[in-house]
Image (cartoon, rainbow over all chains, first blue to last red; front, side, top):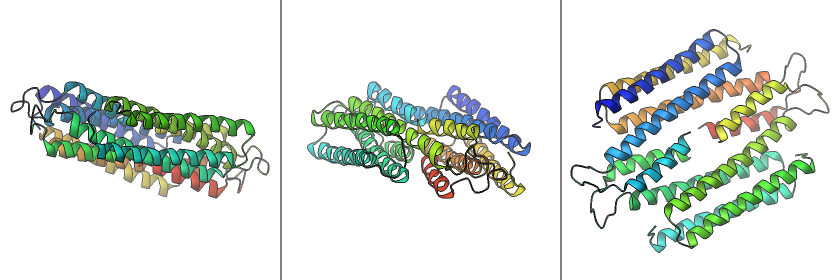
Length: 92
Length: 92
Length: 92
Length: 92
């Protein structure tokens, strides 16, 4: 994985936010929060995790399916975007 | 989309089976079948639809992300398979 | 399943619309439509199927978890709605 | 939410395991692990989160839809299990 620092930082920011959301679930359970509260927190964390996965997949499709240095312009950008639209729709 | 006939036939067979499953849901509702029966039929049809989508995505990744005629060997087969493993896991 | 006619008719209308969407996928494949078109049609049909399932589950939760004739008022309406919110969020 | 201690402990054990899995994603990103490794870790964490949600929903259905003290026996156990089967299938 040859992420630029920018992408790595973005993914790290996402995963840290996700960790914070998981810790909030933990605190809610420890504090005997109501079931509805806990379900909402889990649903939110699941959304964050889906967003993280979508970003990793996006990076994978854009950077790893074709070695751009050896095969410049070989990845069909439109076809890649169609795929990513679908991935995002399903990961929601 | 330049499917070989073989692939098109496979997809058509899948979509016809799916149509049969949707018609079975319709008949179950008309026949006042129990809720459990109807839920099972819908869950099965959803599985069939996920399988159909997975196959179309597979075809898209393998055939359309890179124009093999113009950029032979440009698609990283291993990276493509990793992506498809993930797609299949999520489409289930 | 003791649906009122109204509910049965609503579910039947949904399943018939879904059948029409599956037939559109079939026609698109037969007509050698592009991959993107086919993926969009499948995604739409999947959404319709999720909506159908959500409605059947809603009916199940509201009508079958508690026999209202024998246990009037026993179903906690607020807890049932919390559950259905979640089901709808996950079925999307 | 009136969980018995046993249930609360089970949920806490699950959420702590999930936190460990999210931390593993963080470490993998910091350590510049390969894309495939990161995708696998996220997929595993997503599975753990789905399992956590399924357990909370199960608790909600079994304990909160009907106030067992006021309406003993009102929850139709078979209908509740059918619902939970479905929830588990969709949360996977």
